[in-house]
Picture 1 (cartoon, rainbow, N blue to C red):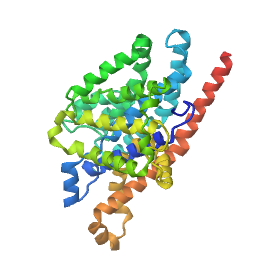
Picture 2: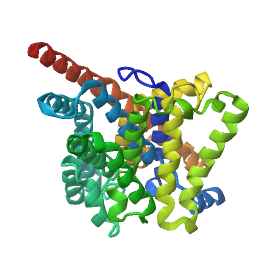
Picture 3: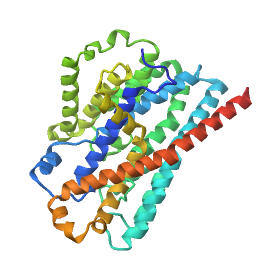
Picture 4: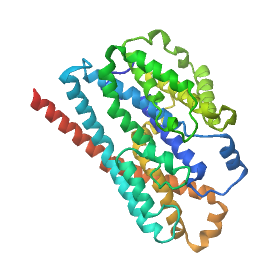
Length: 382
């Protein structure tokens, strides 16, 4: 049985941390840090991709939203349904919007300061403003279709997936209300159509995909209806089997994106692998990790994964801009000789420090405030 809906699943939080780490690593390796080329970096760029972290986030989102709605909405119709949906939207707004808006404003400020000084990591203020409007109004996935081929995007590129998630959060309750008891059949049909259809990178179908969300929703329904009792991967309790399976999954995932022969179907395999990982984590029985220290770190990172996702590109820009000012003249030869290690280390420190600050002083207080408002509204309606 899956954990009660009012309790977080530790292994799902571990996967959030893993997804955030993969996204940061992918952006480090593929152009957002000016790393010096060497044989290892050339190999990684030619033969791997680590952007499957986004697909893990999508499957988790579908799983979590369905668990939440099933716990709070006894019937998928009527006034009670829409009151619960409105409360869900309100909670998501308190959880997501303040941090996103702050990071958009920070990106605009950095663009204004550094683009005028001739520093080219941040786009021009005009470009960043157009970027920020698309991010603020949650249509960045459509905006990216046009700006990416012409290389006219700003530093808000992570907002394409956040926009897609927000569109999903808004539209799914309507799908739920219209389909009701036919929901699983409709979702399965939509899932297989997407998995079988080619979705080239940076195409329309790539940026409006919903297959990960659908898998998560179906997984939550299956757990709620106890349909997975006979499909629980109990063999993963044994370390001799669990470790090779996990190593194979984690090695296979980055290799998929670099395997040219897969072409437009690489996205399908990313979704399948992300779904397998969330499926294993959903039982909350240690089928993914049992190392206390690694689990603790990934749970910690998972709690901050939203801030990490929002802030890491800005942290990279600050690294490139500020590092020359932080290094003394005597240290310049050493820094030049170890350029990649220094850039990666400083960028990670900036990312984690900024993310911890955003999580501690923005995300947590506003989320608590949103919960208090919801509790007050619920008490007033009784």
